Length: 208
Image (cartoon, rainbow, N blue to C red; front, side, top):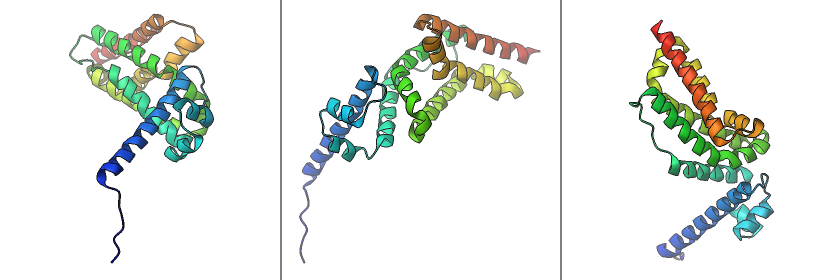
């Protein structure tokens, strides 16, 4: 019987660690290019920024879709370092202020990637999945933070949740920041005013 030679565990582990570092460098290079204003970086530019060959790039990521998936996860990690739960026990005005302060910070972190994604999203199932996941996370947070007010809405709960979600996600933020030219403070104030009006109306409807 002939025994096949195998790499010792430490060599396999070292190789895996190097591969992971290479993938991380590629993802960071992709994001760095986007952050610097290159909203449609090519594989060649990403590889050059990461300090790897184009062949190494496509060995680690079989296509742009897999790179978009990894980059989306990294953006989520960036946001997660800034995210803190907003207590549903706070008074409504305090919850709205805390929620909008946090959304403004997270959306500003997301902004370069969101602008880049908008250019490719019609042709990329993965970028559409990234966006759907981001919307789902915001929707879940709204349900947690404003659960009491949503309960007041009765049959209109889902419509209210939809309206709050629209007000707190990238599309509305982009309109305020990019299309209307509002600064962060002004855009955050508009978001707070919108959420406040929607939630107070829900409470009033529940008391009728």
